[in-house]
Length: 85
Image (cartoon, rainbow, N blue to C red; front, top):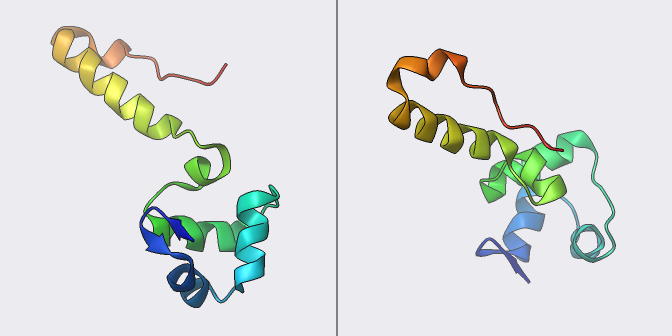
C-alpha cells in the first residue's frame, strides 16, 4: 500500500506502528493520537489538518491571500482569511 508515493512499509518503519494499525487508520477511520498524527504528516509532507480532513485551509488561505495581493496591492492589509463554513 502506498500513500503519497511512500510505501506503507516505509511509513510503518519510520513511525513504529505496525501494518495493521496503518490499515486501520486508512480504511476504518480510526484516528491516531496527536503525536503520531504529527509524525505521519511530517513523513507524508502534508499538514495534520489535511491528514485529518483531506483539506488544507492554511494552503487555501495562502493562495487566496497571494491572489488578493496581486489583484489589490494597496488593500492587502484588509484581506480576511478563508474559514471553513
